[in-house]
Image 1: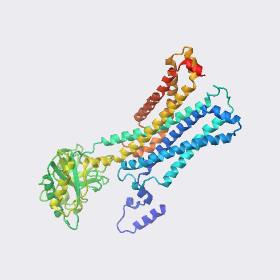
Image 2: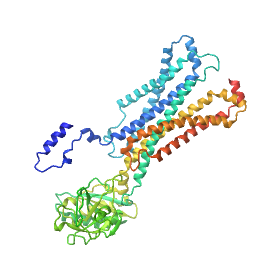
Image 3: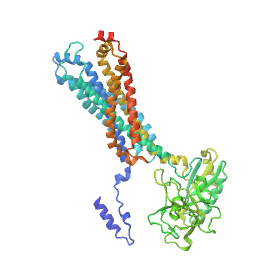
Image 4: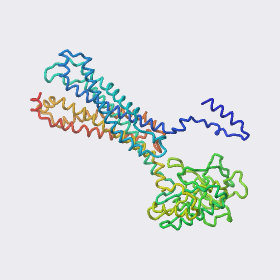
Length: 575
């Protein structure tokens, strides 16, 4: 890359015109050009999938440990009959492998239906080559390999621990309570809760980011506004006057449509794909060369049609044509550059530098700033001209026509095409879209990210709660004899319930502390995906921690209640 940049700089120096330094740093790897900024979201989702896999593996390991406790007598008998430890380990790993392969088969069957559904939710142009995503042989082999590896790694520990106790006493009721195994299972639960908290925190941050983005003030009202873009070919409309005649005729036809209350036109539609910005001059006050404004050409009635607030002065009228004095409407931020009070009415600006006598425009109105590029971008300062006074064809060949309706705006779509056909039946219509859909598309990617990571997080939370419930329920079952003795000696049900709840709080509390530390480190990777919220937002961390604790307590309530319903006579008789 260094060599390519050096060669590019050497070629740039050969031009007769001086080249700006920023223009000579255009070296971009092809992969980066094709993939774009999708690397970070995919890394986040891949990490989320790994977290869910680890939580699921932790649950399987816990189940194998619990099942191994029940099978202690079986393993002891096999050992007594001469079975080697290696042979018993192979048997236990084979059982674990069968379980994982069954899970892999079920997962692939679910993915066969789930992946197309997920792809259907992917916003347009957010993931490159999304149409090539499918489950092929390599993906299936990878999934199976991961399942086999998981079964070996997470089945090895229970298998070694169980066969190490092969010499346990064969007497009934002996060897059932294994403190080391209980500590291991508790550690797994703590790790599951910690991983679930990391995912939930990330999902919470993305959700809040999306909600803030959706509630942002774009500067215009998209409701009931339908737009149609028209690109005039220079081979047919070669002059600015021809383009103006076309625009005037089409606006007149559109205003006659049934249900249409307002019409307008603009060359650079808000949240569109085309935009021209540049510097400007102001009479009597210097303007920084770094300031770039949107140079828009609009029709009379455009601002009211789009719902852009008029703060001072007036809108353009049909009198603001080539025969009248040059006028302009500036946005709020430009008005403050011209006059700190924001009252820039009467000030003069020029969109050309250096400006000639005919280039100066009198400010007749001030409108609100709008978010021209996207909701997450800062509002763009803008200077608008009446399109009837614009003489450059490049500013008029691309025009978006907007209509505001009193009813369903979709119903005017045929009328838009018909109006275009009346003016020029050979001119094809460009995109016809609702401004509400345009705004929704601008926030589609954050919404998709929040949904996908939220799905992973909820699945992780469910698995963590299942693991917590399993550990507590098994602990209660293992202590049936102890509970029966305590109840026979007069222990209160409240004390027994509190013993289970206290252990639930200890496990979940440890998981919350560990997960909070992990979340503080990992959520920084989400910085590029967040809007108007810090990756260490204390409110989100607190709410997620509280949610984890409450749901963990809910999962521990059933085992706690079961502990108080143990019949002492039956428990002692069973033992």
